[in-house]
Image 1 (cartoon, rainbow, N blue to C red):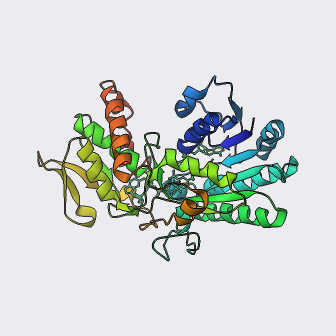
Image 2: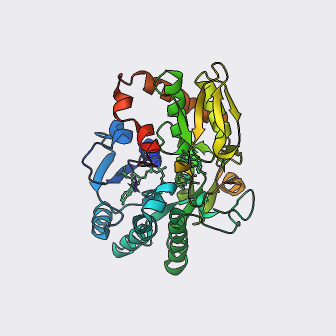
Image 3: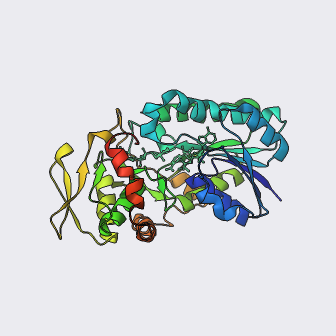
Length: 362
Ligand code: NAP
Ligand code: GDD
């Protein structure tokens, strides 16, 4: 039985990857952080499974990483842990660098210190944010990087330190340069989930309006469940290499809104420009989307579009498994059900939008 460690197992990708590896017969060890609240919702269904184990640890704490790696002696490590919110990285740049940049180095060094450099394969969760202020469209493995946020600069260090350890110590470590991938488990402050939850709440009369930032921003959005398969394939490849993982299809935030609201039963019409642009419910004429400066970033990445040819041809990965339309449908259908059982007042009590409007939470 192969043994794998997943850092960031409580996150969107970590939870899907844990399911996939368990299905493949792995013994899966997830690293979690201590928290005063229950944040294990995404992996609750796996707890109790004899192939699934949890260990406390933190990417900013080498000792914890060394002790878990020494005890498990894994065949594969998937380093998914990160402060992964780009806008938040402008608020906590030093912490973001510690987890997202130095954290990768800590994992690599822990593997070496445990004498596993020759046997343990390492996957690093890299990102399309590396292309940032893009120098080429679409972006592939040969496109130059131009990181454009504290998060992206930290991920750039992670990418290069992985490459360095591969060349210096002949370690099997690789980066997956993943474009945005979403799901019904996506964090609620990333734009897609913020939209699908708001569409569901507005359709059910539980929210008045949705406030967003740059509606013209373009992304190549895929389904997270499909993307974790590729993480695994990258480590099963004959040689350690880096891969772009994307769908090759691009849409704007505005288009995402239109489709999500349509799935929730509301036809949208946008009028106006820039900060004055508004989304109207065609049937009632009510404004349901407004633009707020709170959600603009000091520097924003506005044109991400990936070329997945290498992953398709060399790994046999299918970038078209779940279409953009199917993805939006999955997310909205999930959130319509979730919102329907929200108790009266529950949303108001922890009204994220209100905090967002006040700029407390990005
Ligand atoms: P996510 O939902 O935000 O999950 C992040 C995970 O990292 C959580 O389990 C979190 O634990 C953990 N974490 C954060 N700081 C940590 C620390 N100091 N020590 C240990 N664990 C820590 O992110 P995701 O969407 O699943 O993404 C997974 C990885 O892929 C991240 O590295 C992200 O940067 C990268 N990525 C994501 C995308 C995307 O579109 N989703 C695209 C490209 C790359 P808590 O639950 O305790 O907070
Ligand atoms: N979050 C958010 N909230 N984004 C908004 C909003 C809003 O209200 N309004 C517009 N946007 C725009 C952002 O400015 C950005 O251009 C785009 O929507 C996507 O934002 P996010 O969903 O927050 O994702 P991201 O692209 O910044 O980062 C995600 O994808 C990266 C891969 O490209 C994260 O998952 C990163 O961890 C990941 O590396």
